[in-house]
Every structure is written in C-alpha cells, then in structure tokens.
Length: 411
Image (cartoon, rainbow, N blue to C red):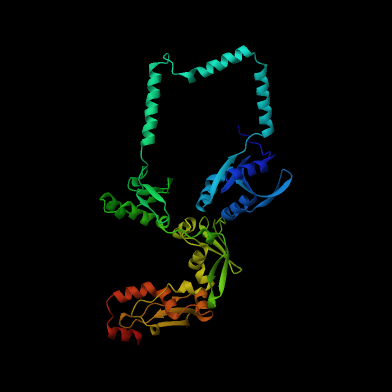
C-alpha cells in the first residue's frame, strides 16, 4: 500500500534499513510529490545533479537532504546513472505501527472463528498440494504441460553471444540498423551494452550502404557512432579526488570542481545547451560542451583534468593546450608574422609561404596573446598553426603562384 501524504515519521529508520540492504546504491525516497535523498546520498546527488542541499528535520534530527519534483525523475535519473551511480527508488509504505495493528486485528478475528470451520478450510487448501486430481479439465492439464515445457526450453536456451567485448569487459549485443517509421529515408544504428539499450544514432547513408552490403561490421559501427563506449575507462579515484593540471611555468593547478549543467538563462545565446563548469585554482569558468566531450565525461573515459585541459586550456594558458598545434612540414618559423594591425589596433597573425603566397591576417584572442607574450606557454609557430593551419595546408596543396605576379602584388 502506498500513500501520498508527506508524513516523514520513521523515514530515517527506513533509510538506514534500505541502506543496509543496498550499501552501494544511492537511495531516492518518494515522499508526496517529490523524490528525496538524505545524508551522504544527498551530497552525492547534489554534486551530480547540481541541486543545492538543505538541512531538514526528520525524526527530531537535522539531516542533510536534497529533493526534486517527482515528474523530473526522467530527467535526473539518467544523469545519476551516467555518472556511474547505482540508484534504488523507494516508495514510502504505510507506518509500521499501522501495519502491526492491522495484522493484530486479523489474528484476533482468526482466533475467534470456530475450529471445525478452520480445519475444513485448511483441508480444502491442502488438497491440491497432495496430487493432481483427475477431475481437472483436459485443457487446463494441457496448458500446465505446455508451460512446463516452455520453462524447460527457456532454461536450456543459451544466452546470446556478444557481437563484441570492449576493453572494459562490456558485452555488446543486438547491434543493428533500422528504418525510421516517421521518415523512411532515415536509418538509425543502435545496440545494447550489458543489456542496456543505447540511444539510437542517425546513420550516414554511406555507412548504411556499407552495412547492408556486409562491408561494415557491428564493431566498426560501434567505433563510428559510440566511440567513448569502447574506450578504456579512467580509474574511479580520478573522480573522487581533485585533479591537477600543469599550468604556466609547470606550476600545478588544482581542479577543485567540475560538472555539467544545462543553461537556463533565456537571455543567453547558449540557452538550453549543456555546458561544463569548472573551478580551477580559484577561477570559475564555464563553456558549451561538445557532444563528444559530454559522452567522454558521462562514460568516464576522460578525467576532469583532461577535460579542463581540452576545454579551458586557452583561458588558463596551459602549455598542453598549445602542444597540439603544429605547422605543416616545410613551413619555417621565420615565415610567421605576428603584429598589431594599424587599421584596427588588434594583434593578428599571418604567414608568408613564398611561391604559394601569403595568408590572410587572422586576429588572435586576448588569452592566446597573453600566453604568447606574458606566460610564454605558446610559441609563434603554435599560434600560427592554431589560426592558419587549414589555410596553410590548402595553399601548399594548391598550384604555386606566378613569381612575377607575386612580386607585383607586393609592390
């Protein structure tokens, strides 16, 4: 029996008993129109869901609690699961005192009944247990036989062999492509990992054609559409203690907080987008998260420190951020020019590629300029590769310019 009232008498005792049965699970209690969690589970849920905790008086004690509306369960439960939490949802039952009272009343009524009648009822109940009587209809006996055969066949049935096993030991099954019912032109790929259904991903037409011709396998499609599911997971300790990233002059910077939230400010251009929030060495910052990085975060294949380096490396002037940028082979550092443009007084970068011409000037950000001139964690070549890399590769692969024309353009 479930009740809708918000009476929380004895809730801490119930919480403690459920915690003993499920010590590794985060407990969510349905109380009235909300789901609530308490004590250490409230702190964990608050961190993952970005909901503030509050002190609540239960059974005469002040305890830490967190709560959210019951209709928001479909939103918050996936976040907890993606964060690696096991979740147990508990529906509050009637008070134990009331249950005991009803049980006592039931026993009292039974004792008052006459003994001959009780014996007769017991005999009637025990009769089917002794043997299968011949007076049962033929159809009923036939159904029982069929059910027994079905159960035996089910027990003998071998489990489905996985289509692949990831580096983490996860088993991939039911990988397949299917056609959309609403738009027949669209096809989707999906699979299950350890029995859990993955969110379908819209397929590229070329991948679909290759799959239908058996030129593309399920492992290859998993690599294409669920890459983070196949990567090695980071150790749990990386998510339990503060990460450290090397800052300017190799000074360690501590990642004190890192989580994901959805922008709720309708006035912001990134309203409704998922963003990373980080507190690093006393600085608070946020940025829109890419889909790939979100998957890496929820699948725990990249640590908070690695995601900070990737998403906030420019703002923190980290050497690791600039090490990824390299000029194409054959382009010398002397070809790069970084100077303040007299027309708008902004710092810009360009490159002279000789017979291939000169690139356009590209304005560099304040943070990149700070890393180049102040912290010296970036070089001229790295700045040029970051802003001009694609332009340089396109020009080098194209035809060389006529030297006379190049000279006239310079004049």
